[in-house]
Image (cartoon, rainbow, N blue to C red; front, side, top):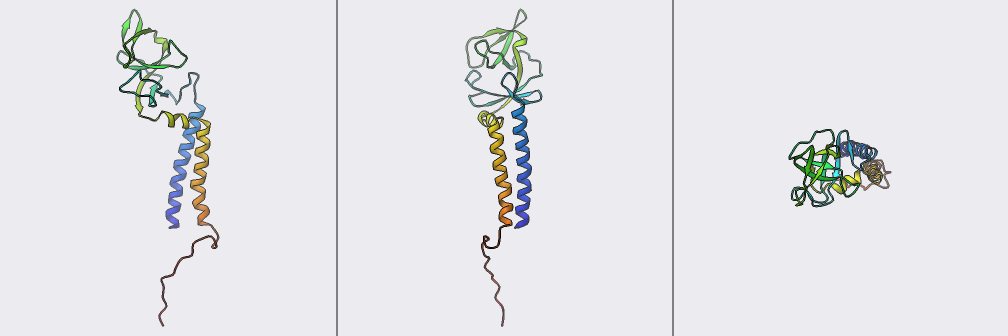
Length: 176
């Protein structure tokens, strides 16, 4: 039983350290445009229905910042209405400008190539809020405390004084 608990402790420690490292890396890598990610990859939390039916509010879109977009690609573009970038699709070009139109909207607009921040690579349905939590300092603190409890508590219970441990009932009956 003790060996099994030790194995579980080691596995939990590995998962905990990996998750804690990911939280701290994501927290430290928030960029000027508000996106968080590692290397050339960023997470974008979908906030509207502009790209429905593929993407819904609360989904986590994965954006590749170093890729050159082409017609038909979904891209993250600086918004003309706000400081928050928006997901839209390149539907063509006109006089050196890109024609952008979100999938769930009827109107299109023109944008320069410099306004494109990255190309949509995929998404994780419903993972926007967990991603926001893991990217925050609060998330790192909660992961740290939860990990300590999950890892330290079983070890403490194994070393508990005999008075705190449940007494085992012996099934041995001596022969006379």
